[in-house]
Amino acid sequence: MEYIILLISLIAIVFGADYLVSGAVAIARKYHVSDFVIGAAIVGVGTSMPELVVSLIGAVQGNSDVAIGNVVGSNIFNVLGILGITGMFFPIAVSRANMRFEIPLCIFVSVVLMLLAFNMFNGDEPVIGRVDGIVLLLFFVYFMWYSFWRDGKNARNEEAGVHEESTPLWIAAVKVLGGLAVLITGCHFFVEEAVVIARNFGVDDAFISITLIACGTSLPELAASVAAAFKKNTQMALGNIVGSNIFNITFILGLSSQISPLHSAGITVVDYAVMIFAAMLPALFGIRGRISRAGGAVMFICYIIYNYYLINNQIV
Image (cartoon, rainbow, N blue to C red; front, side, top):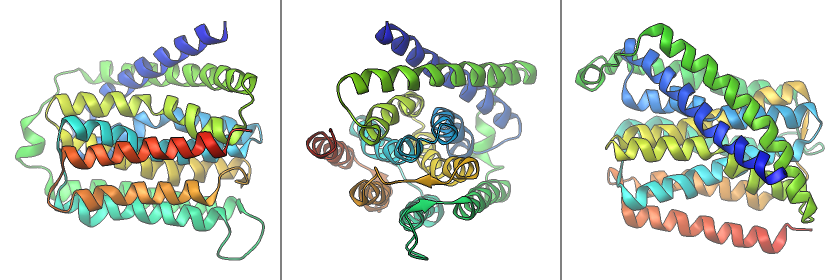
């Protein structure tokens, strides 16, 4: 029965995220927001709703390993798994603006998260406290403000004007609200059943959160990125991943830590290091203006190696 509920929950997550994203994109189009900003600030945030719900549930229940591991694992899977798979089939365009702001910011907040998680600023017990969470939330506010400020200056041009969305505003709003409701419900049951199944196999919470739950809650990112790539809009695919990773760290963990301080004993320095390494790869492979198929393949191979490490070191 657990497997049936898990499958239904995954379907609900995918369809809920699809309606949420399509509604958000329709609203954004009406205000002439550019493709990358739609991917980063609209689609990225929308597809990260499962991670938000899972981490909030983990914080409320006092399960910090789930709250933090979900974010760390999702960020790793987003880049190495999703961007890797997408890049293997569709070379991904990387603009100079991406190299100057979004990608460096993603690397920076990843490093900040590790420093906060291990309290390297004050040497106390490893925990992401409320003050740390406020710092992360301020980074999120800055990211959103700068994205739309820059877009307002530069994107009311042919890139923003070519694509017009004919969906009526009220239908778009219904999609957003309905998609969010389905998403939250699907995530709630997915987390419950995934944890039950994994524990039946003797798997600990840290491993569950950083692999099974992280990949499951990243399914909307996978669907959105592949769909964007099929439509030859790789900027939206890249924006989806980068924006989602920034949102995961700054908003989700920032908000979760306001509910309950997050202890990260089960998430090791290796996991954080892999997350930072993954955040750096788009800058490395995109230095010539695009992530090639070979670059995508290397990312995906790195994800396989990381999971091999987890299987051999984190199952109890």
